[in-house]
Image 1: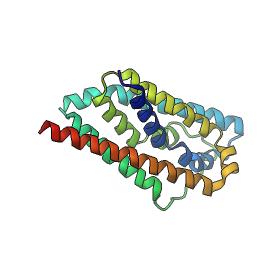
Image 2 (image 1 turned 90 degrees about the vertical axis):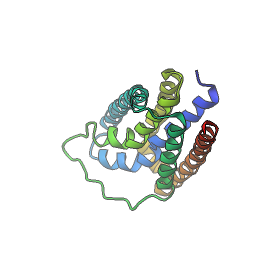
Image 3 (image 1 turned 60 degrees about the vertical axis):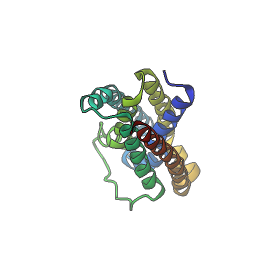
Image 4 (image 1 turned 135 degrees about the horizontal axis):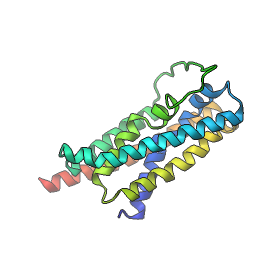
Length: 199
């Protein structure tokens, strides 16, 4: 079983990759035509769906990586590269595209659960972690611990948006990106170190 620092590291990584702070404007825009109570029901439902999808990919990840015979150093280096690219987008976000309003039909699975929460980045990351884990319990625990505050943040997204404003949300997302870059570089260094030892 992984030690507590490793579980905490995974938890922080997953929380940053879910990017609940960065998703606040998108969730608010897509749900603005619904009553507050209805908004919260939709958010909770979509977050539960996203949680199920993320855990499913974690459970399948080890099997897929073993089937294609991917070694541990490759998994760690790939994870570091993925995290680094995500962090760069958080720090230097691309030009925002206009979000199409949903008036009469509430969003279901797409785009809130997938890909805004359970996007390609976190799905790839949990698969990579699964490939180097001794058991699934520690990773699933980290996923759930990261998911819980992310869900609470999005449930209170309308209040947070009013409280800290767009600039505050942007600043927090950039701060999370900086932390994610540190984690990514640490993963890259560990992967290179393991590779050199194996040569």
